[in-house]
Image (cartoon, rainbow, N blue to C red; front, side, top):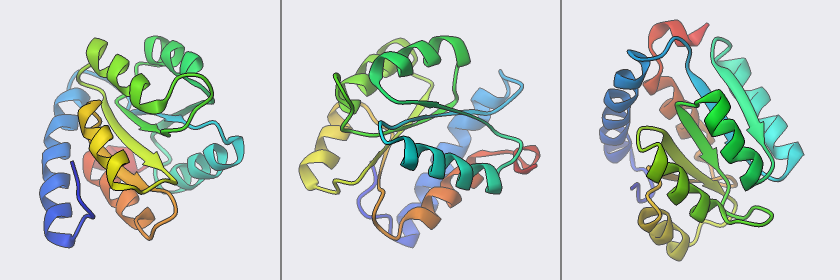
Length: 155
């Protein structure tokens, strides 16, 4: 779990996550990302930004927990960006469910609410990483995705 991502810790976490994802990539042809976010505008904007940077990656979106669980089973994503506040079930509870049945999927909590209690809850619910939407960490999100993709993932 990250705690602000100073450059030293970012490098350590990127190395760890790259090793985990490389194992997954050896088992799968395409790298797939699922963005679970109830705001269609944010989901589409975030997807567009990631697509511009990583054109060879396959991106999918879900607006709520039910749709996310369906896509986990049909799309088989390698990485999920999960909002905490979703209609119905919370993103934290959804994270726990997904990690229980699919422990190899990496889940990054991506929320507007950068609160210590949310960071702590993300750890308890088995999220791999925590990022704030509104902070200057967008560049770090791109670095994270870039670090876990093999060179073929960059398009």
